[in-house]
Image (cartoon, rainbow, N blue to C red):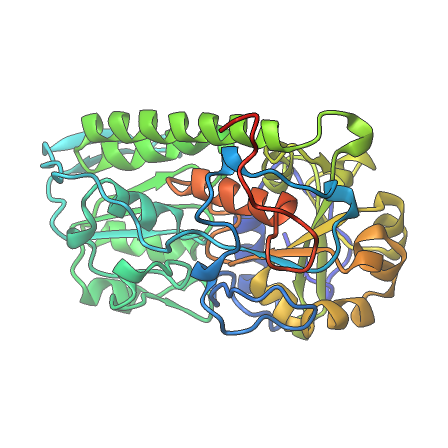
Length: 400
């Protein structure tokens, strides 16, 4: 399946961004920058993002539950950048000891036995699997990375993908991995079969990424590496944090439907002419609704990911357009987006220049950092202090 503009219009099944993007880049001649090929910035201007560190996120020192916006969110103006407090991965301590051998049945029904977890490769199009391995405390055993794995602890590892998200058998075999954890978002499949043929255990997990299956991903990685108990502990902790963050956001977001922020997720790669709206069951919808906002693409009936049309943008009438940082950069920032997509100017988001961007590495990865992603997006959506939007990041007296 192909979804770049150099193809005919497809109809997408229930499948998320990583799978479609990887497939599109693998089989088309269109040139699109790789997902996760850039870093987030602490910009927030109406032009392309600046190189200011993203750690300078406004109001980050104030707990989410203590933020007290003084301006209704639908009345805010200007662009904002959602920044994680840290790009680093918090690892379990002490690190668990893998109990091996262990045998698992993977997402494809294949029985895989892992006898050695001393040299791990965790590869997918969103960087979620490697982040999970590091969060479980097994980062020191990881010997390589994919292009989407962008957190500092993995930065020095050799990259085993080429041309974006194409696995290189030669690069992988040169690292002599003892176990590979992956999913169907990255390939080609022939390479994974070649690696299995070489005697390397390859565990294929689900490619689905959503807030609802974070625990499934974490536990799947943990089971494959022989640290099931650590996986259960990490899953419980992450799910508790997600629930707490969503609860804090619910107190911050307007409760009346007429006051809720109307958000549209737009995937853009300007140099390749790629403009897609993400709707129901795309992953972006769960993210938007968890933020206490309205997914306007789903509201107008967009299912999955569809090529953007001017009619759909105007009909959706978003107050905020949510984008990846590199996507916004690819069209020259907010003003470049409006020039490239004139229909955006006809929406409240365009009129108010309300674009919220977040690092390609983070925004749809859905893993152990999901609570931090939700927290950062909520700040950018409701309390972008320091952006001239008239928002006060002082503690709310009623909750302090």
